[in-house]
Length: 113
Image (cartoon, rainbow, N blue to C red; front, side):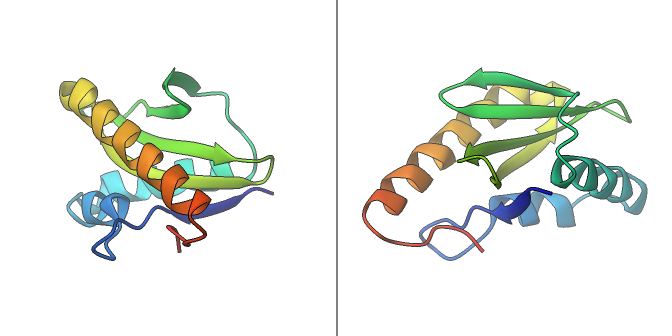
């Protein structure tokens, strides 16, 4: 099992949770199923999108995406979520979040929960 955590920004918020709460119940259930697969190390729908950020593709509705980074062998940090339509903007934000995560971790801060 992998340890799945959420990135927390400098204001104490989780961009992933904000996105997830805006989804309808059916989409949120699909995302929850995808997160269970990630936690179980089933990364078959994952591809690298640059700068250490990975994208999990969910074939449902508008093409939901989960963006995350791997911190070591066991830790997954959820960075953002989105859809195919906003993919490039979502990837850019996920990369920014991942860079912030790594910088704050280097400084000895805990940028996840």
